[in-house]
Image (cartoon, rainbow, N blue to C red; front, side):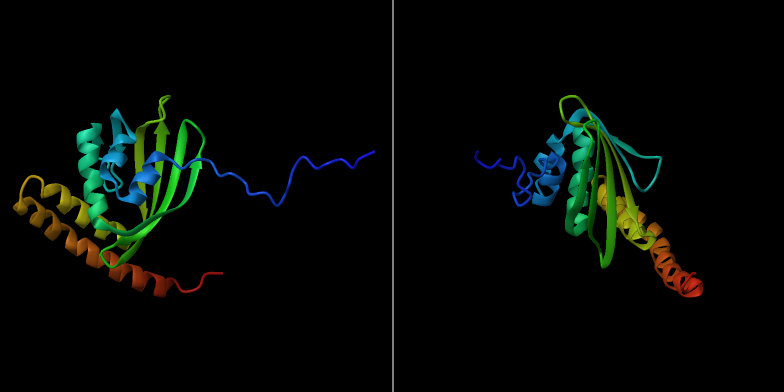
Length: 175
């Protein structure tokens, strides 16, 4: 009698699920493809203020264009996809500061993003992102608005950098 052949080969490569369209587009720095990953009536919730939400392809495209301009070395490090919900984890740089991001998405039945909520860390990087993104969006209206937003956020940027260094030193190693 011939020996039974195994039904599972542990050495065989495991096929990873397809990457989300937004991930592929952002990693390729393809604004049109990133915008197309969203449903026409999608909402992007700002990580910087609860007072702003961007709706529809035009507004979301404007935000994505500024993000692609402001973020350097942007890359995704993980992806969780559960059908109706998906999460992307990313790293990059804003100015001279490392930043980590989490994108929480609701996916509609057609596979498009219907809602995206973005989270950033650490606090000094959030302040830099706030300045660059805020000024980039304000530039669409006028240079003066962009300069004003940048000037208003610079003190916050300084305070978070100093506070981060001093606070970590004051706390020291915790048991």
